[in-house]
Length: 213
Ligand code: IMP
Image (cartoon, rainbow, N blue to C red; front, side, top):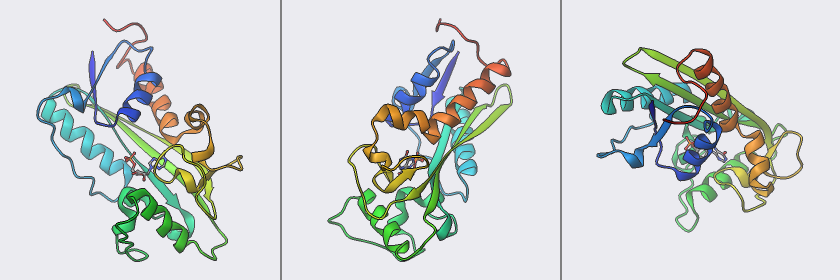
């Protein structure tokens, strides 16, 4: 069987392919389809965004879809940046930070650090919600993966992406951006959500273990 992974991001696709590599399924990405449609991630929760993407792509391309949405939640900021993680710098909450000389990631990180100045509670977590949806069979499955941690005082490290230079995973004293990629993958929210999805896909008989045929 074929499943469309709703991403054009090579890194994410590689991670998903590696976790699901022992399943009897061919994974396609949006790079394999003609006429890529845009789905706006405009919902209030990761789950709603992931469901919106999975159902829209499944009904458009007529094959089962895996879609995900992820971000960072910070306790001292009422859970923000959450679904606004990618464009936190540009939203009203906490004031906009429009400095064109910085990358979007740098603007997001700087805004977060400014909002946490003098805050004692720096706890936060990365969260990923993954949705599998097959419109023909009427099957929908969702899972969540969490990586707990805290926000550093300043950016450190050059690995990873997004908030990694200012995110210290629980049990570590380095930021995610300072960890080797293998270490990050072991504790990654995305990896945890995908491993749970794999278990459920096998348990419910949607896919079988074995080589792709
Ligand atoms: P996406 O939905 O996975 O594309 O994630 C949305 C945003 O959340 C990204 O643009 C990043 O800012 C942030 N984010 C998600 N996962 C990670 C991660 O593993 N490390 C750092 N930032 C992340």
